Length: 309
Image 1 (cartoon, rainbow, N blue to C red):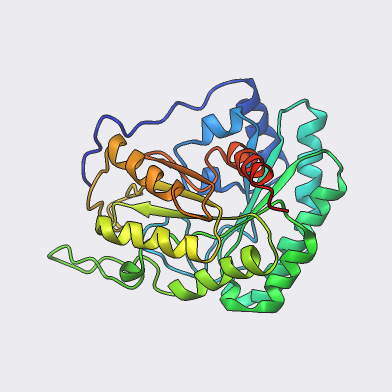
Image 2 (image 1 turned 90 degrees about the vertical axis):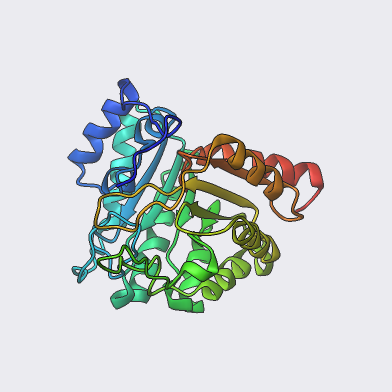
């Protein structure tokens, strides 16, 4: 594993709000991607009142070469999970933990595609029914391009629909050669164009705030990063996150490059010059849910200023 430069660092998780959230999340047997995916920003996000819950279990049916979440055959769908999730959030509020923005994400369940979309939809509805003025953002899988699944998400009325493009088009099935073995492909079961069609469906066809994220440091070129941003802009994506890929362990794809702060700033400037992108969060430690509450606020403010309904 490549040694990280000095600017790759995160805060140690501390603080009253962080400790309370950690305790109540464990008590209600809720999975958070913050923990499962070893996110470096867990302390900062939880202290700011943003939680990313991972529904549909902790085992993914896909085998992306960058992700620390375990892969395998998924368990049965827990149809009571939406109510348990809402109960956990209500418990957080009753214990005076600060929480005002919830991100719902999941492992991929290609074996239970429509059922998993239903769990997403019911989870959004259950949280909205609490009437706690909590914004709900969903970070959804591609649901294999099934429009009926997309419709379930629409009907639940999330505040933001997020779907990560993850990397540039060329690297989706690229197998990294380490000299002794081939590392896993970046997104072997995903399709770049399918992800773009999903974002277009929500942003252009139904005028919902959409968001997508890219990791860099997987072997892409600068021109490919800009091309990916252009593609996201072309389908109406309004919020973009760009962060540094960090290798979870030696079993995953190696880091090809550590981008510095200046390079991230230039990517941000380029992204925010595009016609549809109104907010870009770019930096070494940026992840999909990083500053999610601020991104939504900025997007709504910019939409209001532009007069877009």
